[in-house]
Figure 1 (cartoon, rainbow, N blue to C red):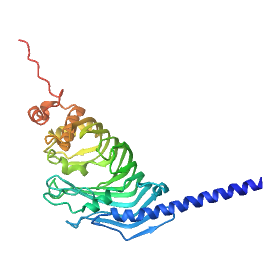
Figure 2 (figure 1 turned 90 degrees about the vertical axis):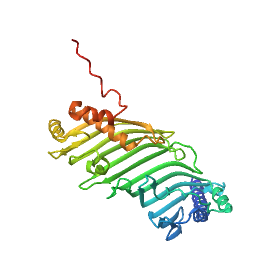
Figure 3 (figure 1 turned 135 degrees about the horizontal axis):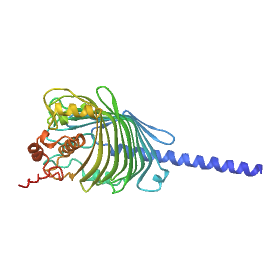
Figure 4 (figure 1 turned 60 degrees about the horizontal axis):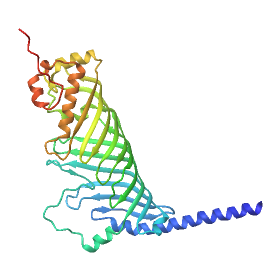
Length: 365
């Protein structure tokens, strides 16, 4: 019996030792490929070879043209699979990014710009040589899991005007499974949790579902809790002339995107919503009428919405479509007569919304 225990102990030691050796060499295998894949604009302070992972610290990305810093991270840890030694592809068990910060903005022309979303170059020759292209394309990557811990995102919308509204997300934890490069059409499970900063309090956001990194199709559930309504003031101020003093937003939605078409039904819950008394309107609803209705409802409104459309259609505007849905929901949830809001105004603005306006029956003489 004692001999068997010794034998089992020796086998365990050999197995663990062999695994560590293989993993160590797999990490050495990944280091030169990481350096090769990093293009212009990327910089890091140091790369260290640990026993089971590769550590890259002080990473940052700066756009070579604008010198705008879009990304930085305290540390990136890459845990390779020892199977990378046996294949040409790079197999990564886990890629963890610690305390990264991202910066995105939308230009005045409406183009998204960020760490990996750069303005297109027009009439410029490809700077990458054929040899460099071959080298990059030769590296196939498979990542079992990507994790972002304690991340932050700052988004600035320059299209809206001056001052440009800014959205700030903090304490972001993201997990995506099964990612391939070159990009392959897969349903990669995704889960995101984080907080959104407001002037007086922080709200929370949770996303669960799947995403196709190649086609950008997705099916996800979105849950928002306790986000201040005034955070979105720059987006609704053209339709709100009265002042919204306070209120928080809860929202549940199922978001499906397929072939650039979005289908997103959901429900809004506006809590502790207070409108300043006086002149002005909120989505065409007179402030005085809205204040009176909110008092009867305990300053809380629940309303449903359903946003659908082709995002590649120039006539489809996601922001305007959503705000239109909110306007309809407010009118219906509060039970405000259309004549109070102004039927002609709504008919022109909410064209195509079936069932909201019905022709009045003529009285029989």
